[in-house]
Image (cartoon, rainbow, N blue to C red; front, side):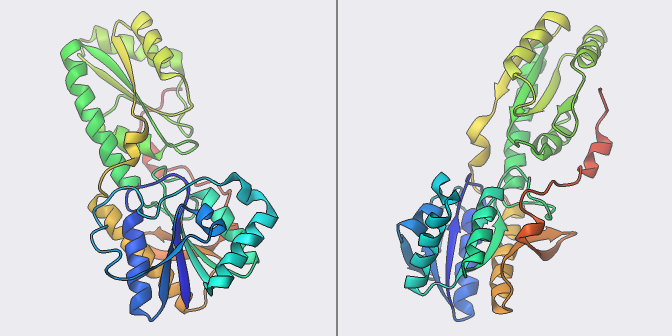
Length: 316
C-alpha cells in the first residue's frame, strides 16, 4: 500500500517517535509511506513527500512534530473533505495514519467514509481521549509540570508563599492530577475535582497558623482565574500568594522514555492493523495492551473519572 501519515491539532512530545515508527514499520512490511506536511492543510495542498528509514533517522529525541501541524476549520466542510480525499487518491495513497486529538479523529472518521483507510493515534498532552489509558505526550508533559512544581516549592518555602500553578488539560484534569500528586500539592483543582474555594481558604488559613511555610495549588485551566485566586488567597489566608501560568512550555521538550515506548508501540500497531485490513479505528493502550476501537466509540466520548482521585483529599 501507499500510506500517508500526518500530525494535526496541538503538538505533543512523542509525535515524531510515532511518525518514525509508522514509516519504519511500513517500510519493513513493503509499504510506501508518505509524510503529509502541516496536518490536514497538507491534504488540501497535496503537500506529500515519500519517507524512508533515513528520512526519520534522528527524530526520536525531538519534541514537536517534523511534519508540522495546523488547525483547518474549513475541513468541517464536506466539499473540502472530498477534495482532500481526491488528492490522496490521485497520489495512489489509500490509507492514512493520523496522530492527534479528538478533532483529528473527527477528520479521519469523515475521510474513512470517503474511502480512505484511516487509523488514529492519540497524540495530545491532555490525556483527554476516550478508550486509552494514556496519550502520546502526556507523560512528558507531566514531567515538565512536576519540575515546575518542585521549583515553585523552593521559592514558595523561602518566602512563605502559596503558589497557584495553572496547567493545561481543557476538560480533562489528568495533567493537574498526576503532577499534583507527584509534586505533593496541597490542593488539586480540576473539572473532575472541583474545590469549594471558601473551604480551601479556611484550610490554607489553618495551615498558616500551624506554621507551614508554603502551599501549592495545581489548577486545570478554565476552572478559575489563577491571578484572581492568588490575590484572594493573599487577602484572606495569611499566605502571600503568586500565580504561575505554565502555558505552552508544557508541550515542548524531548519525549520521555515512557512516551517513546508508547509512541513506538502505537505506530507499529497502526501498520499491523492496516495489514489486517482493519481501519476506521483509533489505537489505544489499556492495561498495557494495544487495542483499537471504531472512531464512533471514541470521538466526543467522555473518559471515566481517574481512579487516582481516591488519593486526593476532597475539599468541596
